[in-house]
Length: 232
Image 1 (cartoon, helix red, strand yellow):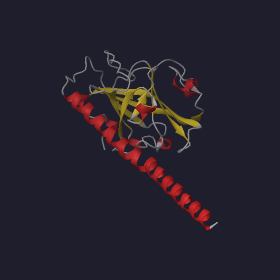
Image 2 (image 1 turned 90 degrees about the vertical axis):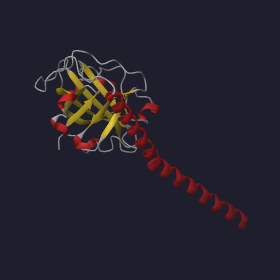
Image 3 (image 1 turned 45 degrees about the vertical axis):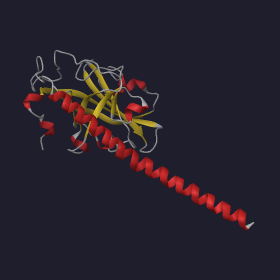
Image 4 (image 1 turned 120 degrees about the vertical axis):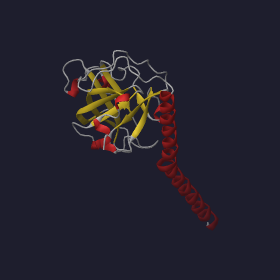
């Protein structure tokens, strides 16, 4: 009997240690690796842009509301980073790469663009997904977003400043209408240049989704410096 009890106790200790290691891996190590990968993605993009001619052709002024460059950006390949997102509400050091696609592997490296939605700054609904927790916790503070908040992106030639109109709105994963060209529950009634952000809810679950909708408020060439929303 003593042998059985001792064996059972040792088994419980082993299982407990494995659970602790799993929690450390999920909570800490995946975040460390993801942050490193995202930083590398951003560095690679900035190096790539620095080697290219960054003059837009032509670039709209900051007073041209809800407009976009005449030249549509080329669609990136699946898994390829093509833009950087900044959300001042989440911190002035918060910036994440945006990659093409939303597969599990892609979302471990940054935010993911729904490939069947509009391209950045173009007419339609540019839609982006991100993890709430794990893999760097990019959208951990998603519920803090409020109407009027700026969401700024750059593709290396142009700054795109979107302004939040609605959200966070809670729905279920099957509600794919949230990334329609004119999302029915967003309050928009006609085509425009919109942005949709999606993440999981609750914080450590995936039974629901949180949604934020925004419209393209202004654009400016990178040569003009950072947009007002990113100036401290």
